[in-house]
Length: 317
Image (tube, helix red, strand yellow):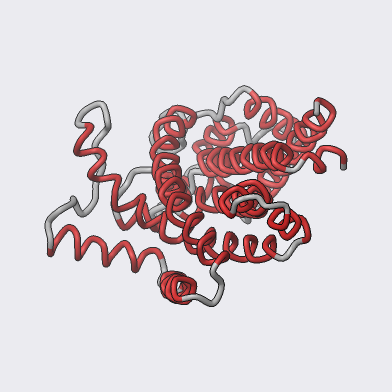
């Protein structure tokens, strides 16, 4: 187990280094001088002295190799510098906004798993039955509706028509816990609906596949109860692919929640990235992308470790 863990951690570190190198290279390949582009925003022209000063502030006057090593060292220390736009600490801005995005993702994921795994299991065990047909039809309908459309419909129904929940906005949990939770419900459910459709399909397919294996028929022939066969021999083996898909979707949700945050006016990390791109705040863009990539790699590492616990054969590969 120790060797398996060390291999996975080493692989994650190498992958993070590669991602950081790609991010640095892409921003270096952006046409034009970032300092000149930033100072010329709004149609004005910048003096050579102002451009030179900004280049020195951004560290762009150093050789490329020095910039790259400085970028790696600063990233390792979580020192992302300051925003070019307002001079605020990028690390502090990320630390403030990242938990808000993670809150939506975690709440939506929990809701999706609580609904999709039992529904997918029931549909897989009763393939072709009424529940399977009805659940698959609802799943297909939800899959075809984009998230921002679902969010807009939720705002219209639950905020404007029924008046049960706020249409959007954000209040810190420490300031007003009840209002914070009320504002969290609609964004979390919107994320959950998208994720639940994927988890449902994978759970149903995986359970349906596991039902046909020899060890399930053998366990049934030995006289084990149906519940024990499902829990020990079907569901346990079927959860491996489901966990893998959930881990991949969690990483994707880090970047795709931008529409959900926009619809509900939720000040998360995705909105910070969009604003930084619009304002050409290159240090902030680089820091946010690297943070998202690091979290995605960490999630994949956690999924590998969890998968190895469910299937010990993985540790021997």
